[in-house]
Length: 258
Length: 318
Ligand SMILES: Nc1ncnc2c1ncn2[C@@H]1O[C@H](COP(=O)(O)OP(=O)(O)O)[C@@H](O)[C@H]1O
Ligand SMILES: [Mg+2]
Image (cartoon, rainbow over all chains, first blue to last red; front, top):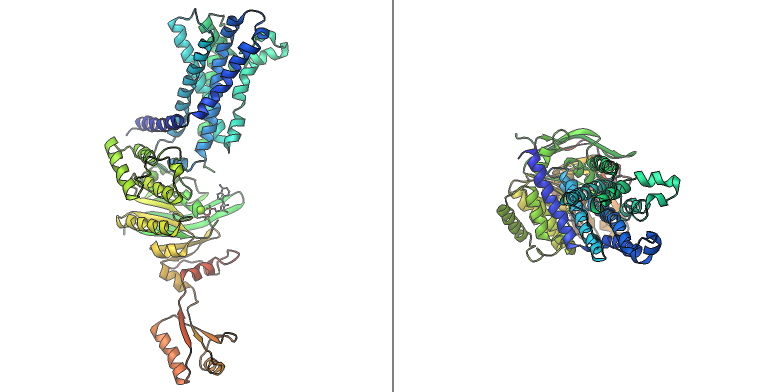
């Protein structure tokens, strides 16, 4: 068997294993959805009036949902970091390492599984958004495709980082702590309030961190707001984090296990 | 002579400044059971991890099935099966799913994978538990599933790291039976154990690992011969008979309290006849005579006493 078809076949086997885990124990994945859904409801129904500056509830829902969707990815990949870290402490990984399989397939299985879960989570949280009144009036089919592509790329980037975090974490708790920034970062982005309402010194930080450009791009695609240079900053982040996370994860994984 | 299944030379491994393996040589001929015997912390698992490509040695070379460990680990992996010291099953999925996962990773066709799975689950008495998550299995069942998974790819060389530690006596005997069956089909088995009885029972050759070195190596018989300790023990109830026996025999150790004498002996017929002749000539009758041959326990404790420094010459018996 050629090494590419071996890689594809083994990755597919590993993916099926991870999806089986997720299907059999859905509570972890579902728990991770609670944070974005609760924040969505909290900000719309409790802080909504103060946050929207009087622009009205439906306008604020429209503003909020794109950020919440990307936050959902941040939340989902915390689960990835945790499950990678628990998985690595299992004897079965040692067994895989002594088998003539494609090495990378173990990580690739986790990554693809996590991206699929992220997309499904985004769809679920999106459905909650629609249920409370989110509507996209302007988006064309192309916009939707681009939005979908952005979500996949963003999930891929955060997943590779989370996999790296999972690999270097000795315990599940450590993994969940290490991955915490992935759900905190959206709080420091334009997800809940516009950048211009933040203190001046903080605006550049909020502007150039990975979430804001991605949120602004998604907002533009779904709602027709101005995207500007945000799309390529978002793409650069996705690409950069993917390469970084991939390198970090594979080099960590290829070291001798403890 | 064919190539040995495992040939390791001067393997070294340290963690920080702790030397775990201090240059060990291992040769395992094809189709035999080799046992690495040693107390807890001796470095058995480390040796298995190195030989099964899980970790790399700091020094030395090894060939497994003729393939070099460091330059061609993937070829080594294709011929070996490993059952580590700690359970290597996926607890979140069922026993059957674990087996099918192995079949997929060995790239068996679907039907073949199912056939092998059914066959092995039956052979290892796991049919009833097949649809339950592996995390619910008992220790013995987990071990059996572990070995069943190792056998999916039909490996030529199998590593078993303490396969019976923590098992009840019945499961232990089942495991021994399994191991014997493996070798009957030509598989080479590299087995580690803390139990002398187990090594004695199963292994063609035994190496005693202690303090990072092979303290002794050979068949169980050869190892036993390494150790003086065979003796004849005479017990008396009559102090006079006891004292005259002590005078009639040479080279004895006596215990005045129990009125017993200990005479070094290799336990052979000739030697016993010699002792008995001496007693007859002196007209002494012992109340009890017992022959003690050294068992592997004597060997083990002599080689690994207290501090862990072997008090035997280091060269192996061949
Ligand atoms: N990853 C590791 N880091 C540090 N020390 C280790 C590691 N693995 C094993 N050791 C040490 O090496 C020694 C031998 O361990 P091991 O090979 O597991 O022994 P055994 O299997 O014979 O009980 C022990 O003292 C153990 O503490
Ligand atoms: Mg061990």
